[in-house]
Length: 268
Ligand SMILES: [Zn+2]
Ligand SMILES: [Zn+2]
Image (cartoon, rainbow, N blue to C red):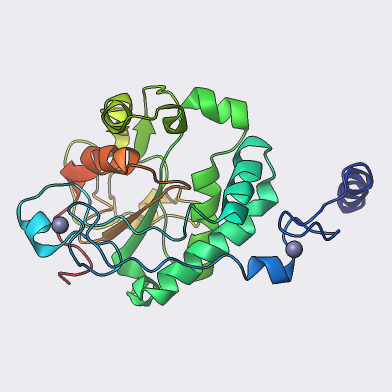
């Protein structure tokens, strides 16, 4: 089987050789020199009002006024970087899954640079932004899900998928130019999976395997039901590949809000 797999890849490489998206060098989609051009972003402003605030967290005033369900929007890198844009395009629309590696690496570097990776991993939880079923069928994979799996495995942070569902097939956000129209397009597009609502019947967190699926051996977990709240006292990191206005993340956070408290990494 391994030989078949290798032969298949060899044939693919023969007919579709890989070229670095940055400089055209043969053999990989991103050579080591060009990968150094992907740099983590340093943000120092509140994502809501633009006042000074570290990394992209909501400032104290915006937190107090509860202007968002999010505690921050932490943007790993700069969309103006044309190489990064090209990588994301090839990853999402030409389905080159192996480009998940440099993108995840960039997010991991960002999390480490900003000390989020220093938090005890049992206080953190990663949740990928889900795709609508129709889009998942079209692409064959959820790009945010793959990114989250890589980050989870490398930083040993638990991840949960299937806690959120995307039940409305909205237009892709990039096809809508107007900010308000983008927000309306995505509004109420996400909901809690019925396995996780209503509120928890137990305070003990569920255990998940590294792909985010509940561990099958529930008896081991002392009779905990599926309605346990896995987000209790956790810092939730929602992961998406692109953030434009933040409407998608905002709607995910709204859907998760019955299960979360209002603490942010800044408060802890
Ligand atoms: Zn290169
Ligand atoms: Zn603010």
